Image 1 (spheres, one colour):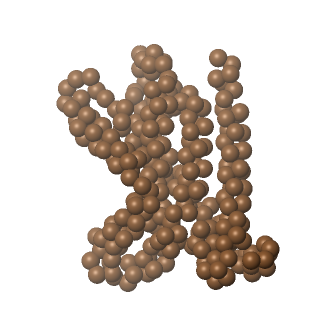
Image 2 (tube, helix red, strand yellow):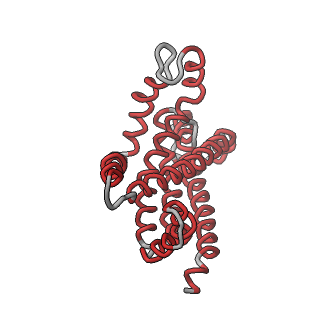
Image 3 (tube, helix red, strand yellow):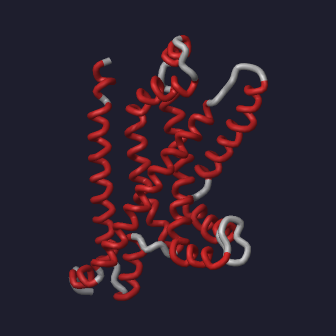
Amino acid sequence: MGGFQWNIISEYMPLFVEGTLMTLKCTVICVIAGTLLGLVLGVGRLAEARHGFYKYFLRYAVQYPVRFYVSFFRGTPLFVQILLIHFALMPVLINPTEGLLVSGDLAREIRSQYGAFMSAVLAISLNAGAYVSEIFRAGIQSIDRGQAEAARSLGMTYMQTLRKVVLPQAFRRMLPPLGNNAIAIVKDSSLASAIGLAELAYAARTVSGAYARYWEPYLTISLIYWAITLVLSAFVQHLESRYGKGDRRQ
């Protein structure tokens, strides 16, 4: 078998660099999109009215659909979701002949150039949104209702109360689970190699196929993933120490 062959890594270093950049790009987009989607879903899950038409509207048109969405994406494997979106949903939306959103030559170019990337980002973002929604829901519910009631008594609207009173306090408590979710997205991006996205796992599979060696490529991407998660963990800890000062003073 021989020792660790560094020449394999050096030969394919551009491929590993390209895979790292793709992983980072996919992670950043999915973290941002998943967080925003999770915020909307989390607020929708808690939306309620005490009486009248809005009580039933919010229950059946907002709360129940959000619960179904969260249950589906948390209850099915992300790998299956990626395959379903790439091979079933995307051909319906973007198709050269009869795409619902894009058709013709533009659809053909998008599918060939960005198809795997779009499918991966969409699937991971939708999945992350389901998990982040539960983080936001728990964080919002952890804040004493008396603060929201006091803000409403001062004339603030529901959205003003949420934005100026509840969310700033809840955000400090949500930082650790949000950081864990971002780290999970980094590692989950490796599943996109199954649909041909040229990220780190795809690079390792390419190298192992060329040389029939596995220590070198897979140990290399393991160290890269580890480095990314360490940097991300340090960043989250920095945010915790910065924004957690208010809780420590209380």
